[in-house]
Picture 1 (spheres, protein in one colour):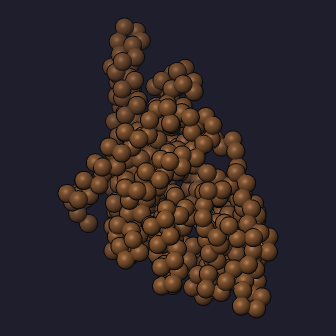
Picture 2 (spheres, rainbow, N blue to C red; picture 1 turned 45 degrees about the vertical axis):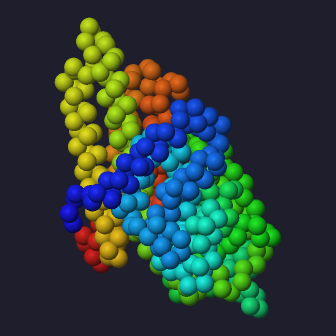
Picture 3 (cartoon, protein in one colour; picture 1 turned 120 degrees about the vertical axis):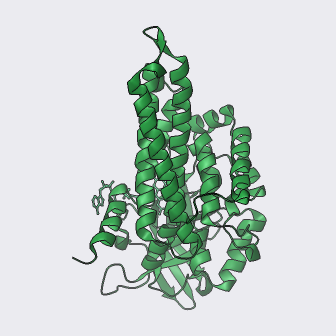
Length: 382
Ligand SMILES: Cc1cc2nc3c(=O)[nH]c(=O)nc-3n(C[C@H](O)[C@H](O)[C@H](O)COP(=O)(O)OP(=O)(O)OC[C@H]3O[C@@H](n4cnc5c(N)ncnc54)[C@H](O)[C@@H]3O)c2cc1C
């Protein structure tokens, strides 16, 4: 892979930076964080410019670009505000499943709803008892006549209370192994039996909507089953191969934002009659963080590039997500450290990066699961 971005990619990156710097105002960032408010107007603005539908094929109204361009935009958005960035870029979360496995009719209906009518999507696999262990999903999807009936509870679902439809993972039959028998169904939030409740008081990403979803006798037409029943687990694993580089880009953006904030602070803050930037320890730490960010960025681009040529490499996607997550947490931690006591106070943005960074090590697979995937690739079957 050639690591030099094309002119078009540089243009997209620049446009994303300009948008984020102009539209993610200090007031909006603070208000949405403080009040845990979903910035619907901002999301609509970003959608109008195509930032969240970059990767959806042109034939369904998207921009027809690749995951690499999506990663560039994601980094720029998260650099300015992880919370607002998440609200905008995750507003089409789950559509990757439709792109990868949807029937022509499903793509025509649901992708077009997203691109032409700004529908917000979601993906629900996690349950109170099933997080990293996806195969233990208990939600039931049972056939009744020519419909399927869903019962179960999903938790921590991004966009749960604002989405128009959600791809729900449930069990359609008991297979020989636990991960067999799982199936995705496309569920519209307006259908009877769908109830979403916002989860409040998150540590970070407070502008992003996170919800518990209870599905009680929700009736789904046959044509809303994704692929063949029993393919859900495999579809989810492939989905993650394609979405983890974007989570990695979130980490790169958060780390970059925290680094820039730290640099501007250490140059102006004086102690012992000198800027704290003049201490060698400060300089070495900044150098270390900057190097890690660049390594995480290139790993992210490489993982995304493999996805864009249709040859996703699970271990690269996991390496990027794990490394970029750790880098974001480290950069945000040092950003607070350089701010001293001021970094511990809510009025300073350092504290917000610190709270926002942690999620990159948790969602779409905790860091331990990423390391497991990398090790499995190294060791094969043992
Ligand atoms: C803000 C937010 C948004 C989210 N959005 C979504 C969404 O849109 N859709 C969705 O389906 N889910 C979503 N999630 C859920 C997220 O993906 C899960 O929280 C995550 O996968 C971890 O699952 P868990 O919370 O049940 O933790 P657990 O699986 O219980 O893991 C807890 C800890 O146990 C340890 N652990 C677990 N398994 C292993 C192992 N095999 N080896 C070593 N250690 C292990 C790790 O230290 C891990 O951190 C979201 C979560 C949050 C917080």
